[in-house]
Length: 365
Ligand code: NAD
Ligand code: GLY
Image (cartoon, rainbow, N blue to C red):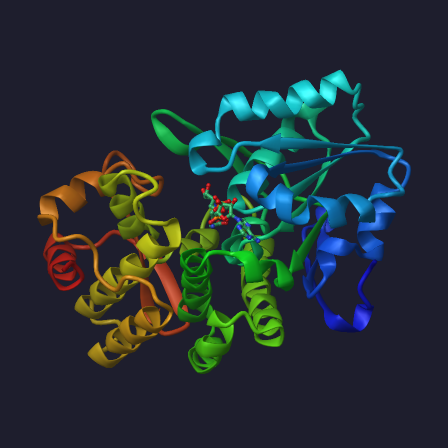
């Protein structure tokens, strides 16, 4: 069964001939005319994992009835499986079923499945179409939009990848009802980030709507996901390959990546680390004289209300500094930080050591 267009909100990512729509609403996993149009008469492979597949593969597969051939590739669940081995399982299935270069891949899952399927689509027969059907809040507001695809290497997360934009993103807010609470909060971290770096009014709306968002209210989620996707889409349209402004989407991430790596991947969810990381980045922005203590306190309150950690582990500054020296934004070991010049405006810059150490002291337990 497909949904009525009235329940669905739509926006576009403007990238010339690689532009694509993002559709957000309830019930989309059961189909939409745009998905049916893309799938009609083609070889279509759904890529998912065991957890999400058990929940949502059946309605999505039914919605793809117009495909010439339809297969499903089920991968094991987890960041630990974002590997060459999983990627090869996708290629094995496509080649066994003689998928040609006009085939369509459909990623059904969170950011792990979306990133891997996108990378498979980027390189299979030198590039095929793919659709994102994100089922985590993080994937709906962040990873499914913007065309970054990757797998992990034992020596670094997301180190092997490509830019490859999807043809369509279908974000079904109903799927978030089965998402574990910690994962929902992890997605809220990225939404708070969008408000902090680009839109103070949106941040205020998020603050007011947090109870409804945490309760998975479909209308509140649809409105907020729409605004987050608008913000991310505008940044991606301006700087697809992260030459400059796209890096501001990493607000809180330099500190957050250090926490994730230092704790051991999987201990803290990415969004949890970004929550604490945004507090540290706000502390840093205050010490650079850009924002006042009231803004830092407000962000700390909002992040806490989203049920995210508001401080990092109590490691010595040296440990953070060492972990941050391998960040992707670091050049020759010196990290850059995304700071708030004011609420709603971010910049990427190097920072003095004393400000960094003071921010670390204020932002750790
Ligand atoms: P995830 O894909 O691991 O999903 C989290 C967990 O939730 C998994 O166990 C998954 O099976 C489960 N799940 C997913 N949807 C569900 C649902 N509706 N109901 C119940 N369970 C469900 O994690 P994530 O947070 O979505 O994504 C993290 C990944 O995204 C990382 O690999 C990160 O590198 C990547 N990422 C990419 C970008 C990008 O721009 N490409 C941006 C941010 C993050
Ligand atoms: N998640 C950061 C980006 O897409 O650039």
